[in-house]
Length: 224
Image 1 (cartoon, rainbow, N blue to C red):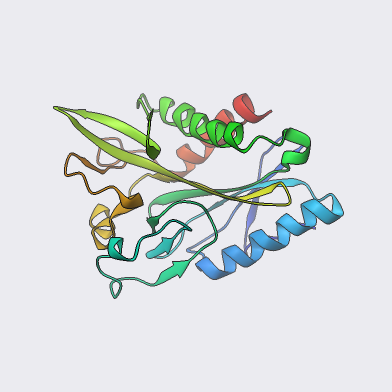
Image 2 (tube, one colour):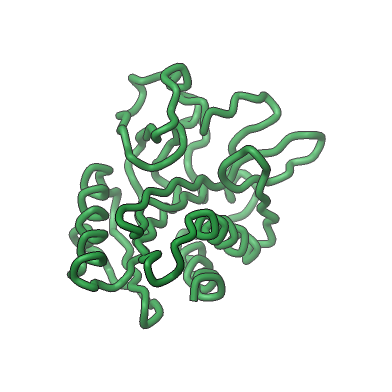
């Protein structure tokens, strides 16, 4: 059973993994309901694995490790409690979110390896645009070295697993309003030398379609 947002357009994928792209800005609660339904269908009915590309209206999400003090302006945008790992993060227009629903029963029950592959997927996607994304010990997500000791986060990662089927996933900042991050301490990181960036902020005029194609190409290399 394929579960997607209304008006979703199916995209090219592999034989094993279905790709969908939701049109417009998808309500967060609707996305969670659709993911949970698809996870159950993968687990119980053998439905195809799914990578679902979406954008949300401006909102904050609180992961299972979120600290109340890291929500600096809870009135600015809606705040959603979520079962994914991690702390507070922002979602909004201009950010490409890829919700990944794959079956670790068949891919290997190794959550650490799965998260590593998600990180590598983002790194490989950014490399399509000559951006060097890097991991950092003790910091979730993918980072860009801006020089002079400053590093900015360009992608977030948050995962939930139910009966070894994954959901939630990654968020890459393509062209979001970066000041929208100011209502939270992103991922609990308050160091003034650590900020948030995007492809646009780095001087790249990259379309969402180009990012989507890079995601698909890189996914095949890493996960297939």
